[in-house]
Image (cartoon, rainbow, N blue to C red):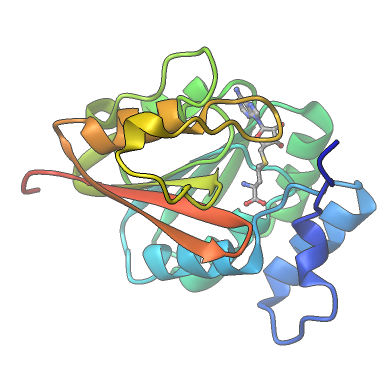
Amino acid sequence: MAEVISKTALYDGMSGLPTLVEQAVELSRRMDFISSCAPAQGRLLAVLAAGRDGGNIGETGTGCGVGLAWMVSAAGPDTRFVSVEFDPERAAACQALFAGQDNVEVLHGDWRLILPRGPFDLAVIDGGGGGKGTEAPADPTELLRPGGTVVLDDMHPPLDQWPPEQWSEKDGFGRDLDQARDYWFNHPDLLTTEFRVHPIAGAIVGTRRGTV
Ligand SMILES: C[S@@+](CC[C@H](N)C(=O)[O-])C[C@H]1O[C@@H](n2cnc3c(N)ncnc32)[C@H](O)[C@@H]1O
């Protein structure tokens, strides 16, 4: 059986993290939640969220709020955030964690709850809507403003065979990463790339074509 890796443990011994990120990591530890975004993924989210004053950012799969904390710490108070978490305990804990941030709302329920809050300047698809499983993925033309960006975490580093039809990659939950790659890469309204942010983690980033 494959070894279970805790991404939350990647924060052990790190210093200099934004306070809100430290608090979210601590919450992850207290809740034994191993699936928080890796530090490098958090930095990527921070880079993408920074400078979006007046912008609208959505996230599916709040987890214990680590990725959200990276983004909130990087953006100004004029950037609005909405994140949704399916698990009631994690959702309630994150509502408490972000209670002091007037520009942040954490919803409890299915990922589709954020759709009426869109379209987004940045959408982080980290729990529902990614197209890795059997459910239909999010529609980027509903999710994003023209010029808006979508990010998917937990893409394992791509295999080195080419062409991609020969790939057959499932993640540790049996989800089909190539199905998700195929959807986000070949969507006619997106310009998409994938890169490795950490030896165990890759990210898909796509921007909706068109002008605002
Ligand atoms: C990879 S973790 C999220 C990590 C978090 N975004 C971070 O940056 O630390 C995925 C989360 O998505 C939640 N989730 C899974 N399916 C969901 C769905 N359909 N709607 C909402 N949340 C979902 C899970 O309960 C889990 O907490």
